[in-house]
Image (cartoon, rainbow, N blue to C red; front, top):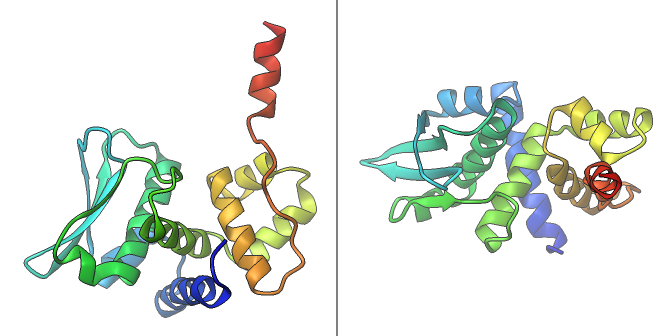
Length: 178
């Protein structure tokens, strides 16, 4: 669990970016922020953020699908807004968005969660949907991103239950039958 002020500060940075540019689309924000976004064969890396000669770059893995690329772009945009000074001396790269990776990766995930998922959109979807998989599909986001967003909502004071439901239950159930 992260300190309330730390997590809320990250959420405020994401909300400010969305408000300044009037969108939650990480590609559009990156473009308007002067961040070049490109697709590359990065091997096992999902993405990376770096600053070269004063120009910020986000590289997305060529193998990523649409939803994954959008998530990775938002995550790398988090590095841009939160860790740009670090990226000026070394590239920040991610082989797995949700595999831990320490404080910087968690902060970038929190930024992505706040940017991609508005509070009211999640609360509305939670009223309609009965489980995490449905909410994720409704909002077109990765289910694990909902857990991060849920933590942010709780820090904001919302009475929001943890989203730690096993989203692989159906696949595991089908394997047992076969």
